[in-house]
Amino acid sequence: MGRLDGKVALVTGGSKGIGQAAALAFAREGAKVIIAARTQATGEEVARQIEKAGGEAVFIRTDVSRGAEVKELVSRIEGQFGRLDCAFNNAAIFGGATLTADITEEAFDSEVDLNLKSVWLCMKYEIQLMLKQASPGGAIVNTSSLNGLGGVPGGSLYAMSKSGILALTKSAAIEYATQNIRVNALAAGAFDTPMLQGILTTTAEKTQKQPSDIESMYNERIPQGRIGRPEEAAEAAIWLCSDAASYVTGHSMIVDGGMSASFR
Image 1: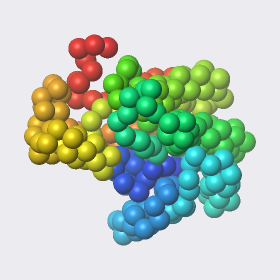
Image 2: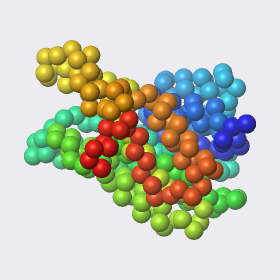
Image 3: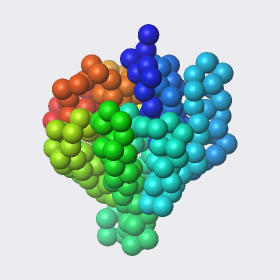
Image 4: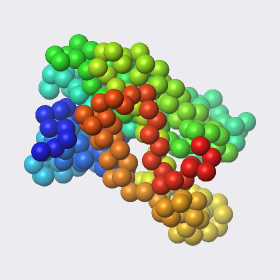
C-alpha cells in the first residue's frame, strides 16, 4: 500500500532531474501523476516509464511561466481527474553566472519568470482547484534552493528567485492553513541533475580544469562527502505531501547533506 494511494499529483519540471525522480516516486506511492514540462519527448518518456511499471500518468506540455498555459494545465487536470491532491512545483532554470551589474533586463525577466513567477502561477490555479473540489484541500511543495538562503556571487538572480519562493510559500501556508491546504518548500542542495552537471562543466571550462575535479571540490564542501541523488530530494517531497506531514505547513525543508549546517 502506497503513501499516496488514490491521490492525484502534479509535478512540474517533471521531465528530468529531481522532477523526473519525483514523478516516478509519486507513481510508486500510488498517485495518478500529471507531468508538466516544456520538453515533450522526455516528458512523454517519463509517463511511459510510469505506465510500464503499472502506474497511471499523463504528460501535458506546459510553459509554467505563462499564465494561460498554467490555467489550461490545471483545467485539464480537473477535467480528467476531477481534483488535485498534491502539487510539486519544481520547474526552474539557472541562467548562468553573471555579476549583478552586468545582468541584462531581459535576463532578469526571464529568470524571474521561469523560477519565481511560475511558482506563483502554479499555486494560484492549484489552490483555486483545491478549494472548490469535493473534499477540499491538498498539499503543495515548492522547490527552492540552498542558494535562496543567502547571497550567491555571480548567481544573484537565481538566489533572489529561490529566496522569493520561500517567502511566497510561507505566506500562502498562513493564508490557507484553515482550509486544509498545506504549503511547504524543499530547499535543495546539490543534486546530480542536468542543471548541476551543466554548471560543473561550465565551471571546468572557465577554470581549465576537468569536470571531475570541480565535482571533487564540490563534494569537499558537503559533510556527507557527496552530491545527492535526485531520488533523495523526491523522497522529501513525497513525505511533505503525505499524511505523515499533516501538521507541517509553512516549512522550508533543507535537504543538502549538511552543506549549510555550519551557517544556518
